[in-house]
Amino acid sequence: MYKRNILITGGAGFIGSHVVRLFVNKYPEYRIINLDKLTYAGNLANLRDIEDKPNYRFVKMDICDFEGTLQLMREEKIDGIIHLAAESHVDRSIKDPFTFARTNVMGTLTLLQSAKLYWESCPEKYQGKLFYHISTDEVYGALEMTHPEGIEPPFSTRASSSSHEAYGNEFFVETTKYNPHSPYSASKASSDHFVRAYHDTYGMPVIVTNCSNNYGPYQFPEKLIPLFIHNIRQRKPLPVYGRGENVRDWLYVEDHARAIDTIFHRGRAAETYNIGGFNEWKNIDIVKTLIRTADRLLGRAEEEDMGLITYVADRLGHDMRYAIDSRKLQAELGWEPSLQFEEGIEKTVRWYLDNEEWVDNVTSGDYQRYYEEMYHLQK
Ligand code: NAD
Ligand code: TYD
Image 1 (cartoon, helix red, strand yellow):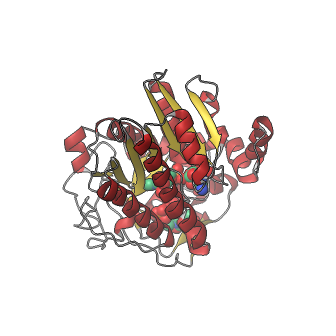
Image 2: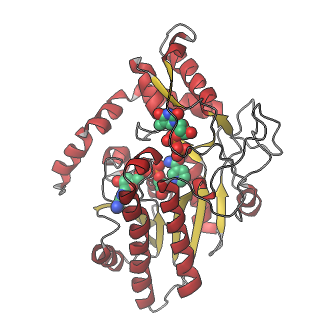
Image 3: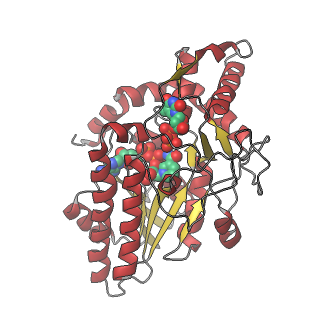
């Protein structure tokens, strides 16, 4: 008998694997069910260190499978859901928006409906239950660059970089009106609305969190930071979109996982919390930092690889600036990022350089084939 039975979706992906690892190790009294379809972005190799733990179970399933998810919730007596499964890459959403609507919108709705049917059939109904939906700051749209050179921001956290600049006066707060631009952010916005609708209509206890850009180990090498570290190592061009002036707000993935833990346990139902560390960076400055760090760790001459920077056509509808104000979460629940950006980047570059085999295997599909055979998983 476990104290709680928690379903984590998308646990084989980047952020999900850090959340699963944290929960499995920190809470042996909880049973953790990791439900994942294992798309190109999901890899069981991300969880090798915990796959044999007695309180962990992996289930290969599509979140759009209504019968399957309902049956699993009944079988495992699920009382908490942390929903991370999604299609997550903006560039892919521009090429193939339908997959994003299917998984992010219909998949989330399917899970909500399964949870509703199962929980309403329990004697205690919604008591002690929680549907926690993980979302992104991209739903809020883009902020203006009112200070292209950067100014001293009004707040700082441990995650803020040592240079610590803000590129505008406005920040996303929990009440900022939704204004998504990419098919990815439009699909996440829609799913956020469905989650809140299940609270407002049926009384389901839900929480939504909107986090800034994550970085760290196990991120699929198509996103900016892991792709560029890989390319620097291979001395391949680094395709910077537009002029590289776009600003993103970066948080180390383990700090996001810790925030999710805090909010899952102490967050108030029906609330939204923004998660971020006041750590804005222009893309081009990140790229230069990655080159300097990688060159140093690889023993190459200083700045040797700056020539790899290649400006390419801008992303369609490229949002200019994201910047999260997470003071509600900090004030209410006392969460703080633990890692300063320079430390986080050093750790991340080191991890990718030390784990070249992981990069090769996730990009070639070798790990997926290995686990399919080992678990007799169907494609
Ligand atoms: P990811 O792409 O690395 O992982 C997504 C996981 O979901 C994969 O394991 C994949 O196999 C699984 N999945 C996809 N479609 C599925 C389906 N139909 N059924 C079951 N599983 C499916 O994504 P990530 O970067 O770890 O993001 C996780 C969540 O966090 C997403 O909801 C994303 O919107 C959100 N988020 C991400 C960031 C970021 O910077 N990466 C920031 C804020 C919020
Ligand atoms: P990305 O990692 O795709 O995250 P998101 O689009 O969700 O913020 O991109 C981060 C930033 O880096 C974004 O402004 C787009 C830019 N970018 C490039 O310039 N080149 C690339 O090859 C990629 C993948 C991203």
